[in-house]
Length: 81
Image (cartoon, rainbow, N blue to C red; front, side, top):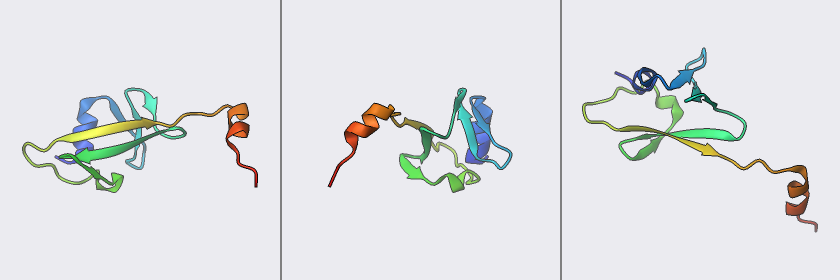
């Protein structure tokens, strides 16, 4: 079984037509939401979704939400030289 197959079997990870992670539990990936794959405690690139799993492997999918700044916050964070 591959990482892709294991994630798909959870029923909470959906994939795009080209095999990339599209959403997790209905949370769309993109914009200010990103993810990283962790295999046995090590971060791995998303290009390894087809990597075969071994017995007792641990796979985690971690989601990251970047803050969305309002227009007035962006102006306050700029630096003038």
